[in-house]
Image 1 (cartoon, rainbow, N blue to C red):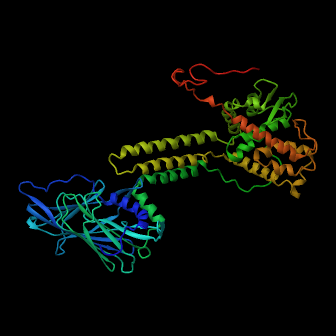
Image 2 (cartoon, rainbow, N blue to C red):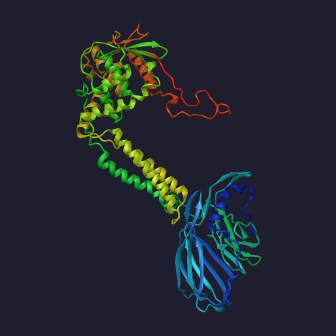
Image 3 (cartoon, rainbow, N blue to C red):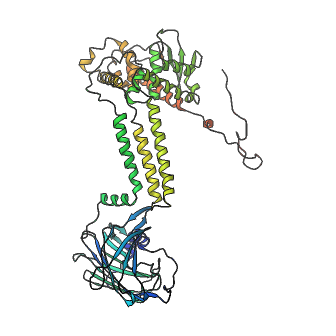
Length: 592
């Protein structure tokens, strides 16, 4: 072998992936050898097989195979199968191969047909005079994506420069007859440098190197040192320094894998479908310009205002309702220390409660006059779905929504998982008839599900009346946020305004800004909140105390016991599998 070796120690790691991929990429099935075809006294063999491979700067390779079969008896012709579908990293890789011509030795065109047979392209050639004679078949084809490109890397002996590589299975290893002589000529662009080459011979997976490699300028000539037996082949590897041959872009590589793994288009189809559906059904009407409003929409509670802004009924809306009920005289909040609070029902406040407010009072007090926040731990979580549903039903009655946002989002979550499951199992069934990579099927199912579920979160749409209310709420939020501006201060008539709109500010998450305008005005603690740190009182202290209460309430109201799921009965207590709480029965209780 002449020229530098393709496998110095520093390059083994960088070339390993390429070699492993392309060995499978362009190898045969590894079937066991078969005898020379012999029926009715007929037989044939290949006297010579030569491939002329030209690498162009646009990374296209032009291949001309000159095959000289020797026929003993009467034959119609030969066929050539070339793999064009491969597995790479769990996905499929499709070789873009186009047949340019099929001729005889004199350049006369021969009749041929091409057809896909599984992962292979089959070229069937009719050879005139294939009777007790040696004939020449010349097949020319072009491949646009057969090169491999390695980036610079740090090897064991230093930096390995980026290089390009042609790793080509010249003959294939699926010929059922011997090949007396096999050879190849690789022609690189004249400007390339750092050329190194090697050749492998033998059956599929063999590492034999019984071939001679000669490098002369930008041309590499390879020839076998012995005849090739049944299902033996010749493979050449040629590498050169990067910089001359045009490399594919990331977009180009992604496109190649997409077209070779067409199920990956399904998430894009799901995106197009969901975008159109969102545009038709999920997009809110235009909100228009927003003007400052000095009070919330009439008859809307803080929780309802909070839902209108983000289309979600969450715990912030529930805790703002507790504060609103306290401001209106329905209950008091007492700070007990160590993160605990007591809620007490009062007789003051004669206004009628909204349905979601009544449901919250029932869930918190459960018929009692007072209740510690800590007593709701591992209990209140059961009430949350019903409270949220009641709040959304109230907004539907107000005409904000035509359908519950939670139900709308839930439908699309269910649709997303249904589509993902259908793609996954449908793809597995389709693999029996179609060339599909399992990884492509799995990715298509996952990303299609994510697209539909993601859009589902934005599908709940407000009505035109809901948009009018949203515009009003946004204007009110503008006032709460910028209340310290001179043009807004005139609206503040006294400290009672602070308490009145504080629950709304909490529902909108702007309570700190709201408190800033009352730091010098709101000096007396309210009668509905009793805390330990209110001796030096102002609006900021109250807001901070309420924020701590809200944080503790969030944690408590969401908490669920570990035993909320089905219990494990366990095995026999005598066989080493017993544990406290195991077996049937059990449970617990409490007092009131």
